[in-house]
Length: 101
Length: 184
Image (cartoon, rainbow over all chains, first blue to last red; front, top):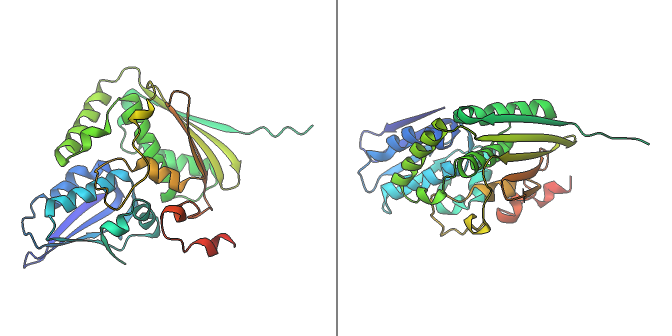
């Protein structure tokens, strides 16, 4: 269970990787991964390839991230597993976010 | 006369045990083991995470989701949750497992809370425009389970979970490309 955040040299791109469980227990580290972002046109890749499962609290946290970076920014959900994708689909998040397999 | 007694298995967690960060993971593993379901089982773990967290937060601790309507509120909610668990003296949840058939189980989660009024429950219907930070838990549960029922005063939820029934209900709210699989 961990959150790792990496920023490209240009600052145009930030990758937030969530490994293991994605739920309220990682709230502090997930919030910290994006709270420093100030670039309004940033692209945030949320790497879900190592995410074991995601619940409704994680959905709230993804919306929080989107709200923080603002409308001019892009938030991409990257490589969700079929199980994680199912939760995203149930909540209609496949329409709220861009998803890259 | 043949008497097919169904076996039920029971877990109970109380007071500060409810703070255990691994509670849902441990419970998922135990239920999978008792029911001969494969583990890790992220579909079951999501369902258990939602219904167990609901039972603890809204049932035992009496927290309202409304607090979570902003990022600051979300953090406050988690602090308040921790504080209330630390002070808990007579709070508990119980989980009852009943095996229905291979791959199919019934799980009841009951809590020591007073239940809820129907006005406390957020509507399940979601739209793409809904950007609320909370209120999707039961939507996920009802989508991933064969059935979901609130019992009594609302302090008990009963779900039927079918491990092999992939996407039957999900297809209702999600994409409809799963119908072919159902005929297999």
